[in-house]
Length: 624
Image: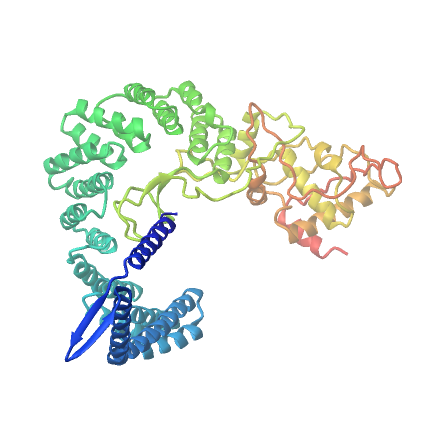
């Protein structure tokens, strides 16, 4: 709108001037070299304007002729630059998409058009890396490193290639050289720091960390955390040789990062040994509030080495009360209560975590049951510990360590270890624990005695003991042996009713051999009882020879317990439940009508009687 108004104003002024001169024509007389020219003012002004326009046009034509060579050269240069830009652009796209042939084609075109351009050098290096020509890539990066505009980029490429061929000395040299530039790149500062940490040069790492902070590569919070980690590593190295220096270092680390568990635990242990128990307690309590950890509980419990187990329990309970309710607090209290023989307190502490226990919870419950004399339930808890989820551990880059480390042994990253579940972030599905619908009432003491007769039972101590795979009652063992014997004899799979309700009242004898089973059910056919028993006995002998799981004795019970360990993970309160068979036969239930609408009841065959000694088994092999 403003431009229109300006245009109208200019037109109006011109019109006003033309009208003004037309109303005042006037006369102009020009006398030059004896000639006289009479004209009006308007004509004179028109002549002057025409002459000026002609001069301008003439000058423009002359200037264009003079500038033609430069214009042609500039046009060709721009055209060449556009072609080079298109070649580099398409080449980088080809490299990104992994098209080696197209990348080589466009790289050759870019090199022909603009061989010394930075982007052409970068495209050449990346094409060489894509095609696997490491020597060409190194040569191109070296040419880039020798230039001022691409020096840091070339050093980065050389650093990457040195890491690929595992030349750590060369990689450190390239990182150090790149770190000398005025604008230090982040990768150079971080790489120089990690190389010093990997070499154990903690003083040099601290110096490099200070430079990274001054260069603005890291923020203040990251600087404090990494400095605390490096100082803790220094304190661990000096803990045995120079305890006073180690205490000074670890106190500074605990001040910089109060939630750093290794620093707080080491400070508590060293200060406690020096007699400064109150200061050590404050450091541990502050770290416990931020991050409950078993190392903190252990250090807090040992602040006074001469205390009794009950005093340590009281101290651990006080520490647990200072932080949030957590599984680590419950485990620390339970561990101290077990050491103090306070079994009720240990059971109360572990009770909220026994529904879906982790390995440490199940192991502590097994130790608690063993301490109270219930060996059967102790074996059950150890069997559950085999299949329980793992406890948190020091984990970095999928590497699990039994103690904290300042750097990752996989990637060399500083402060990489975290206290977490090693399988965190993965979907493991729903944990299903077997719960029998009709639990068999078996006293745990009887089961424990039977298991004790079958194998020796060492006292369970935490996670270091070797747990039993499971506990099988006499009824379960008889049911499995009978099912195997019937399968080998060709009588078909057992029914669900017979697998769950068939009475087997005979316990396992101490010698490992099973007594002859007494027949409590009716015979399954109209054949004479003696012929039926002989047939079942031969089938049992053949099955025992072919399948060790169906044979009697101690080895059979151990193998069967190991095979069914995954199926008896259900929590049991007060009594043992019967273990379901490993394979459930596809037969109709006794109360399920068949295809014709009639109820089919599978007859309960007579259980097989295995031979009592090895000589009878050998003779049975040659029996017609």
